[in-house]
Image (cartoon, rainbow, N blue to C red; front, side, top):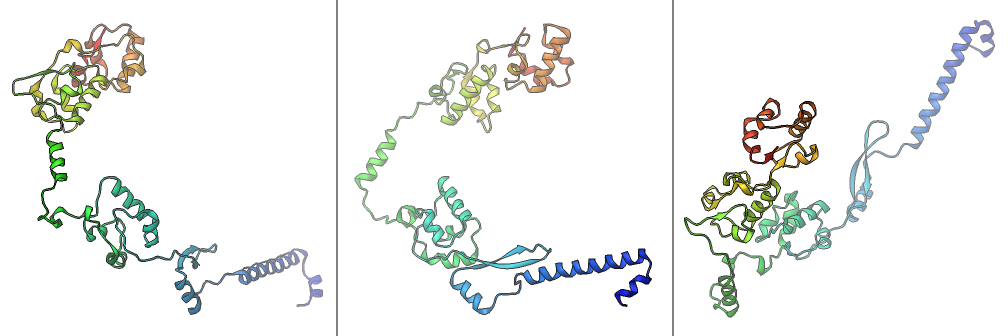
Length: 309
């Protein structure tokens, strides 16, 4: 068909033909452009691969804009080999050995928590350590004498003055005298030093008792100490409690925020109290709260020791 033959075709048909021709030209141009600018996605040549290996490079997978995947080379970090102690090596040395930054952070966290590498095999348990990494690094691990198990020490060494001084300092260190069976302390008045005299209570539990006493406003029963995680139940016999020393809350005057600060009153319970006061006025007895759905029988049993009207 020649262009002059188009004059014998209806106008609507000519428009369709021209549209198809223009569309063909556009599509051809787009395909040519992308084909001409397409990066090489095939495997690298042997020479390029060798060069990348020498420079410590690697290949990484990258998303292709057209929906496929391609590999491209990125420069890597050359690793070194030298003797090191995992208990004292700093981040620069560990990175130079070829460990990943997140592995170095794992080692630092382990050491910060008091962890010690006592044997070469312990280093192989570092999070993310591969068999190849351990096989390459194990010959260079050197555990210092201070970090090795005592079983490896020379037991024939004389009992030096340094050892004697160390044991003497421990023996003469002041520890609080523990209470005898039948002796008691008042739970709402005892400070942490007095609390540590109770058998089974050290510094941690003494601080927890004092902190919770301040938070609650005092104890009405020694049984409340069992709310502390893993608290030794056998210590309860050494306490006596005066409920009159408990600080009480006036539930007719405190705001919602002030009420919910108490450990035994949550947000919904505090809101119920405030709403009840707004609708019905002053609360005269804890029995009035039993109409509220957010309170349980156990809640009433605990709260009656801490509220006033």
